Length: 470
Ligand code: GDP
Ligand code: MG
Image (cartoon, rainbow, N blue to C red; front, top):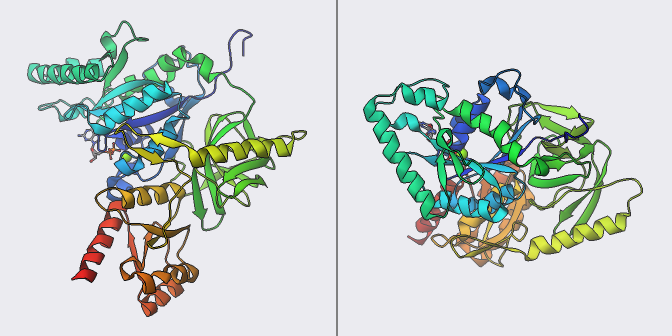
């Protein structure tokens, strides 16, 4: 590294936009994977982090001599449904750059606008992927071509439809206070937000998008990307893993994590000090949440998505920091810092664009009477509970747990059989139900509902209550 050239870490990039705009598909197109088709109901239910290594160059039609300043790109795909808005804001607070995906046939939608406000609030530079250009009537497919080339090949009809749809979107952005322009005509790139037309289906414009992400955007935020030894690390997810026990998925924003490091995590019960037993990453281009083989590491350098194996992680609050205690550091001081963060996480409310306020991640509110919810991760648990609380449904939650449904869960949930029968239910999402648990439930009259999307889960429950009332 040259004296005057700072070493840069991989930028952390968030993908935002309205549901069905094509966020996951676009990420799949970049990675050459097929996560979208495998998702239950086609919905992204957790935050995923993907590390895209430096060979990204091959996809950008960049000449070999053009330097890419960053070692790769860490992409975070966020769920787009309304009940996930807390997770979106959590994802954003750690992002350096973002892509807002807009469906060219739909224009700006409710969650697009919500995303724009979040970006402005967090002061994140972004580009717009104007996706699904292949849906323009009569579009001639030019697989993975740069967009200007692809546009040249289109008929006059397609070109004019493209023009008016683009103009409409630019106007909608203006109405929301953002100046935008197609990037190939944008001479004021720092002031005017770039629009890149893309197709996640056939790949037109994707090379252009990557080029802006790894070359142009890092170029305007180099200070933010300067590599720093001080560990900065945020917990994305808490997961119950059948072999590893409770693990946390974190985004390491800066610094290095080592096996054997003493760390502090924030839990509702207070700071928990533990030792990193193992550091796992998915293989490059695979998603952190995708189940499968992990790579073991002695150390991991930022920026990267990492799964941490350690004791005592069970009650870690998603969205909080993981603090490293270096030899010689004052443990009590570090714990006090964690405690401060815990207090903040519990008390902070998150202003939503709708004008309503939702409580921060940590405080899953439970009631004396309500149903029992069980999920594989805190993120999905929060999503289910947020959906249960939303105005149209409004179902109270009595208790919750992570991981497989055991007899103990059934026993606890059965308390409702005597109090309020309609709440004598366990909603189990993405977890196993142990045979003894289902046997006990059948015996005592407790209902266990499982489904592969949050929405179906809640629908089955509401149908079930209707059945009881009739
Ligand atoms: P997300 O909710 O934003 O993650 O959207 P998805 O990636 O799940 O995509 C929603 C739907 O739109 C899926 O059926 C995709 O196959 C489809 N889709 C996404 N991008 C494109 C595109 O560029 N062209 C076409 N024709 N369909 C797309
Ligand atoms: Mg998605």
